Image (cartoon, rainbow, N blue to C red; front, side):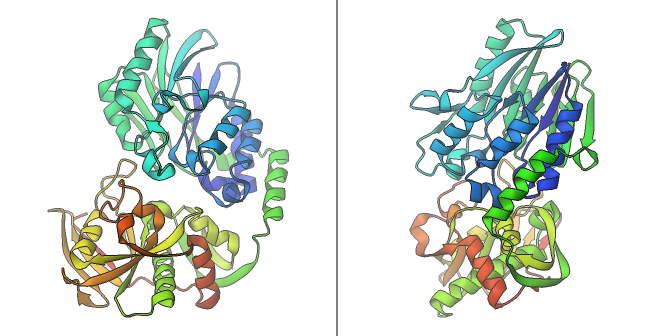
Length: 453
C-alpha cells in the first residue's frame, strides 16, 4: 500500500488551474492500494476562501476525494461553527486525537481509525498544533490538548487492533520530531511548516509536502521510500477549474489599483529571511495608515509578522484587489499599539524567536520606520532605531500591527491587547488604499541586518 499526502493548500485555492491540477494529480495517482491524506490548512487562508467562507474547499474535496484529513490552525479561521459545517459535508473522514470541546471530540470526529488498504491494515490518527487557540479561537472555547499523551493513547489503541502500520496525520510543524522521539509511529505525514521535508527521525519517516499545493508526496510505509510528484506536471480537472473561475468572477475582485514595474516576489525566502520588498510594502502601508490616523506626534513603526504574508505569484504589472487580499487574506483589523522603548526592543528581539511552525533561522518581522541589527551568534539585538534615532527605553512609540498579534502568545508575546489604543480598517483594505493613493514601489533599505546566520 501507499500513502498520498497533501497539506497546507492555502493560496492554491486562488488559482483555478493550479487547484484543478492538484485534484487531477490526486485522481491520476490513486488506485485501490492508495490512501489519500490531508494534514491541515486545506480550507484557508486565501482570497477565495475568505470570500467563500471556506465553501470552496468542499468543491476541492469532492473532486479530489481524500480519504482522511486532520485540522490545521487556519481551518478554524471562519470559526468553530463554520468548521463543523464543513466537516459534516466533507466526503473524507476527519481525525483528531487532541482537539476537544466540552470534553468531547470537536465536531464529533474520531481520534483514530483503522483502514484496510490492499492487504494491509493502517491505523491513522490526527493531531493539531496546541497553540491553535491563540490563532483561531481567542476566546479559547475549544481545547487543544498536549499532542504527546494524545498520540500515546491513540497508538496504544491502534496497536491493540493489530494494525500493520501506524500513521500520524500531523499539523504540529517542527514538533513532529518530538512526536517521533516520544511515540512509536511508522510514518508522520506533517504540515504547518511550509518547507518540504523527507527525513527519518528515531525510526519514523517524517515528511511534509510544503505549502501551496505544489507537491504531492507518495510514501511507502513498508520500505520508507518517498516519491515526490510535482503538481504542475499533472492533469487538470476541467470541471473543478471552471467552478473556481466562476467563484473568482462572482467575487468581483479584479479591479486594478496599481502597477508594478519590477516584479515583487513573495516566496518563503522573502517572507522569512529578513528584509524583502514585499515585506517593506506591507509594513509601509501599515505605518502610512497609522500616521494618517494620528499624525506623527509619536514615532510610528509598521510591523507585519512574516507568517502573515502568504506566498504566491509575484506582484507584477497590473495589481488587482484580489492580488493584495491574497498577501494577507485574513479578516483581521489593523490596530495601533502604544509601547515604551523597552517594550519595543523586546518586540524586535522576539522577531528572531521561532515558534513551533518555523525553521530555526527564520526572521518573523517586517518593519517600516525602524531599523534593527540582530546577531544570531549570541542571540542578541545589537541595535534598534526608529526614524534614525536609537530607541530610548523610556520613550513612547506607536506600532501599527495586525490585531492578531495582540491576542496570540505564540508570536511577539510582548504585544498584548492592553497596548492597543486604536483599531483601523482590515489589513487588506489598508493595502488597497495605500496602493491606490501611494502606489507600489518598495525598495530594500537596510531595515533588517542579520549577523551570524
